[in-house]
Image 1 (cartoon, rainbow, N blue to C red):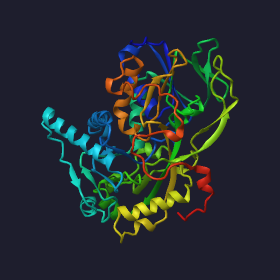
Image 2 (image 1 turned 30 degrees about the vertical axis):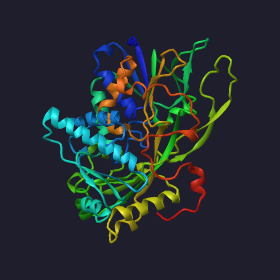
Image 3 (image 1 turned 135 degrees about the vertical axis):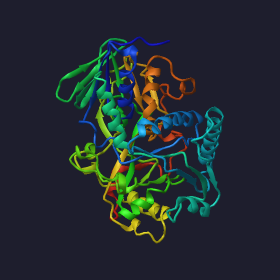
Image 4 (image 1 turned 45 degrees about the vertical axis):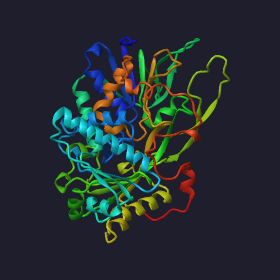
Length: 475
């Protein structure tokens, strides 16, 4: 059944889910009389937000056909206004694996080939470039044009690429502000506000200064910080993923800008090339941050199982009838450094070693790049779910007063042009059929038994504090 239109909506979080939802609501005539407020802990853009970065991979290369199809719909917008002015670069993607990780790559290839055939049938396929299967390290090296390769087999998809993440978020933010429909508030949310009674409702949020924001409907879209406001043990957790940036000469930048994104699904390691040198002059928006953000970096990172960061917090919800009230819970939350340039922070020596090793594989053995000091490192925090699916659902305990839009699992950004509209569809009870079960409120599952979506590489079970205590390697 379609949900009623609320008089007021409070959105917590201005990341991918929160900002795209605000965008979709601001343009939906059904919500023209709804008061909409968006609260974010930092002035936009939050420097340590997962989507505030130099680059993110844009691809329809998914083992799940539903996500592959939705990502393709997003790509059509990335190729248009959304990715204009140098925000999107279709530089190709080399998706590879080592023996033992063939399943995800094979299913992904099957899906993108099917989408390619569908595009040829429905639109003539004039803009679709053929995908090339790669059956050996030598074939992989021949298409990377970096003199190196990672993996033994895979494929090259010339229809994928990457986007300037921060510039894209700024574009969407400015588009939302231009509607004059959203009230933006900069403040930290301490906890949700709940009504009393046998069927409690969420009334809004309590802020750090003691003030309150109330609304008929609260949309919790706080990314990896979401578990700080709800008891999501066994449902959603934060994991820290390593990012490292290495400086390039102008000549190196010009060359690498013409090379594909490389992603090894076995190790989870990937590199994203820089834009051409002509795009490297900081924009006025970048200068606005106070620290010009040069583009002449080669980014190396890992899409892995990540580091957990256990933190004990007061129990964030009211007691449920018949249940013993816990005073505290221990959950994984982000550990970031928002006050530093680029939100930079040290990463475990295990992570720096992994980045160095990956660079030596992706690049030519003679390249000097892997030996250089990193300009900076940081952690990108995913909001992970047990199956790798988003959560776009009303919380079952709060009578449709709380909608949770989270669980990006490191994938949400590439859906930025379309995911807000899907959130609104779910709000209205019109979730697309192919996602009805995937995005529904998940049941509790012991975290050690989470299946994931098969896309993660690297070691499991790493704890950030434990890894940081190990002997650190030199940056």
